[in-house]
Image (cartoon, rainbow, N blue to C red; front, side):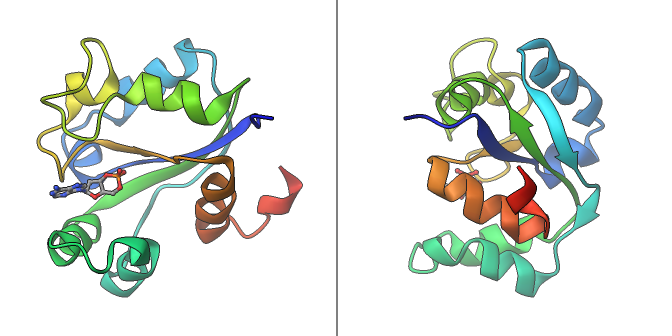
Length: 139
Ligand code: CMP
């Protein structure tokens, strides 16, 4: 059964461009409740750890540079069918393929600097949420 929790983070391009407020408003207007939130920055080492699953990908090094280049806003969100519905709200990884009106369609700069992350499964929502929020089990 689909869970009601997902993990997201607003990425350095969107925070740096001053779009975090507009993105958070879209998230709340779409029915997601923010139940944990941080304003922080990843070190290069922490970015490498977060994206370890992509270690063999050609874009891994650039991705770690980019994700440690500026501030981010990780959040835990609550809603029915949270993982799947949130991925609909953010749109495809490549903003060129993201449906009109999605967060990436409106705010992403490129396939790498794509404004926002959304977990792709309930299991990964738990793993990724725990990376930023030590009290994840309370959700
Ligand atoms: P996300 O799906 O949130 O997490 C993995 C990230 O890797 C993805 O967003 C992009 O930021 C980045 N990414 C995925 N595919 C590519 C690619 N082909 N080239 C560069 N970056 C990518």
